Amino acid sequence: MNVKENYLLYLTAYELVSDQGYELLHINDQIKEIWLQKDENKTSKVLRLTTQEFNWKNHLKKDIAQVFQKTLALKRYLPRKTVEVNNIYITKHAPVDDWETLKKPMMLKEKKNPVRMNIYYLDEKGFQEEEERLEANLHFSLPNEDIEESEDILEEKTNHYKRELSQFISNKKKERENVFSFGKPRLIYLLLLVNVLMYFLLEFNGGSDSIDTLIKYGAKYNPAILMDGEWWRIVSSMFLHIGLLHLIMNMIAVFYLGTLVERIYGSFRFFIIYMLAGIGGGVASFAFSMNVSAGASGALFGLFGALLFFGLIYKRLFFQTIGMNLLILIGINIVFGFTVPAIDNAAHIGGLITGFIAAAIVHLPRKEALLKQGLAFVLYIILITALVIFGIQNNSNDPTYQLSRIDQLLEEDNYEQVVEDATEALENPSALEAPLLFQRSYAYIELDELDLAIKDLEKSIQLTDEEPLPESFYNLALLYYETGEEAKAEEAIKEAYQLKPDDENYLELYENIIGEKPTE
Image (cartoon, rainbow, N blue to C red; front, side, top):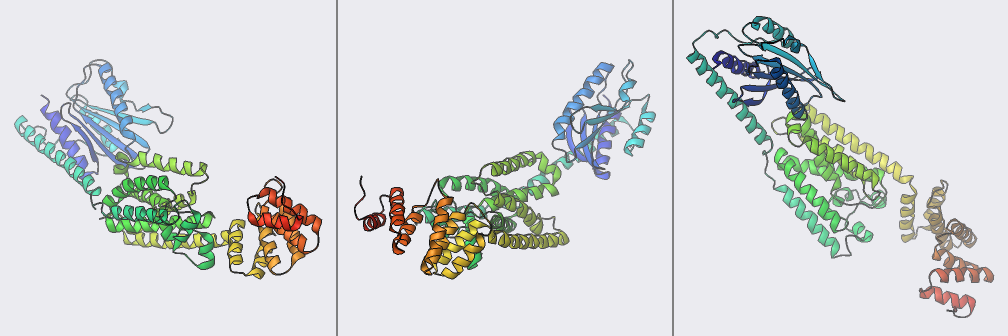
């Protein structure tokens, strides 16, 4: 029984943990093996201490190979990409054959960040020489001042250090449990309920797939935000969903992520993160997307951001638990967002970034840093302000917004402004040139500028040869007929009726201009 060696093993491990900042990773009391780790100079330094004894070089080589494999399995949980293993053997006897070459530094070659290993073999014969190497390379020596005491006393002390090390592990486990159980998931259920209730409200009042219903109940609609100052839509759109599948997918994700975030941060912090991320995602959508949009995706990605911030503070715990899976999930969702046109990726990325910043504002429980929290708050305000300013400029220059604005002006009978806005928009040719011309022609008709209206309608029809608007031909027929161009009126109403034969107004105008009912 190697009483002295075991004593050195557990005493050394204890002092490295208590005095030099090493983290205890694993103890295997059966084979007398202890693993420790410490971050130093952008490197994860791993110490493997053991009292296993090897009679032959090949047996030692096999053990070294196993240590390399164990390190590779451990590497994914370490916060640093560069890993250095220091494999320390504390034994009575060295292998009997020529094994000294194994003390040279080794490297396990990989595509990226190979694992380096140093071997130290402290047997009775070469103890002092190896201890000097150990001290020179790792800046610590084995505490062996009590090594000559009786075996009973050494065993008693060994058991004491075993208990102390076990307590370290127990405390670390409790600390981990406390990190993931600071709060209880309560608020998440209220948020889920609000989303579900809003879905049914939409369904009973026109359908959640109806654009008009979505706009009526608060979806993000850029023209209403800019023209009517309805900025509250940034918040209300967080609780609306477009269709049952959209609701189910988002609520499942919000439930699982929200439960975890509320446990880590507590209900109050969780609510602040959820709301600030949802607002950030909504503002980003306003800035970069002209489409009507709704959903909890911005807030949902904000929860991803909050977990990333958690990983920044608890790096090792993050990678030991949710880290890699979370990063892969975020990557998949972002790529998916760029490849599927219907997804509002601006809201996703905006929510992810502002969720991270929101987590920095509230910070983790028992980890408060007021200066950093204040700076994060300032950063959030700057980012939101910049997105709003950019969004206003970007929307004002976008033909889709200009078209929506002109529609609203037409509803308000503001025809002079329609002409002005449409003329300005048409200075920059776009795919929406034909509908802009149609809108301006309608304004010209109301202003009794019939010649200008005819020119706009004729040009809009030329631009839409493949899919002409029946309304364009209908209005042209009216204008031609009123200005005495009967031949052109007949040709236009025939085209209009062919495109829309079921409309009674078209049929009536056809009979008035042609003088007879159309033939079947």
